[in-house]
Amino acid sequence: MSTAAGPSDDLTIVQLTDTHITAGGKLVHDAVDTLDSLRRTLDRIVGSGRQVDALVLSGDLTDNGAPEAYRRLRAVVEPAAAALGARIVYAMGNHDERTAFGIELCGRSAKDAGGLTAPYDAVHEVRGLRIVVLDSTTPGRHEGWLTDTQLDWLRGALSRPSARGTLLVLHHPPIPSPVTTVNYLRLQEPDRLAAVLAGTDVRMILCGHAHLTGTGAVAGIPVWVGPALSYRVDPLAPVGRHRGHAGYGFTRIDVLGDAVVATAVEATPAEVVYDIPEQDMLDRLRALALEAG
Image (cartoon, rainbow, N blue to C red; front, side, top):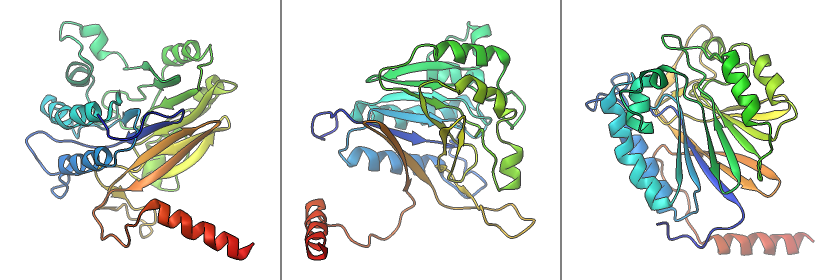
């Protein structure tokens, strides 16, 4: 269990997205050891000693849906979640495969053929906060879609407010992107989703897929596109080029009273500029305020 002080009224959710774990230790794009990046990130989160109420993995958990890749993911995620005392929330991405996802991560039976091929939509409750997962994938396609049946299900799930509101998780961002390729692969027909969300208690929409960090809004609800844990897409590549480069991160989402705050966290190894007691910094800031006042 984490060594942090007892739980407060605030909640902290960590979003890990686009982990792209492979089978057999293969490097993604022959360059990136995605399991090592995930392991380093989880070690950092556990080592922080901070309260984390849930780990949300928002799609493209594996690179090609191989069962072994899901098992490799679980082998590092589950011990970290146990050490934190955190709930694990899994969502499907376009690189995932529903049957292997259901069996290896969700404890479904191989005999449950119909359930394994259906979209994976789910509701989780974390200390009064509702987390709704929508499967925006379509087998064989990379852009996002939601069916009428899913939207009807979502409408029912949100028909009653939750004590601390709702976070909606889906892989494909329902907002435009300035990056042409990312924009092409976003959630299609987002107005249909917006119509369901209008007037509900959804406080933030968490997405991945883009391999870059971004934000926007749907039906007045903030949309957060989290940084990928595998590699980054360059949002300012030269004209006519689509470029990916090394680097990874994750998101810390805090429910602080009436506010929900998403913070991108850089996880790429880098030199420490300073590391001092937090109280020392607070004392300096207070002294500066007194001098200025």
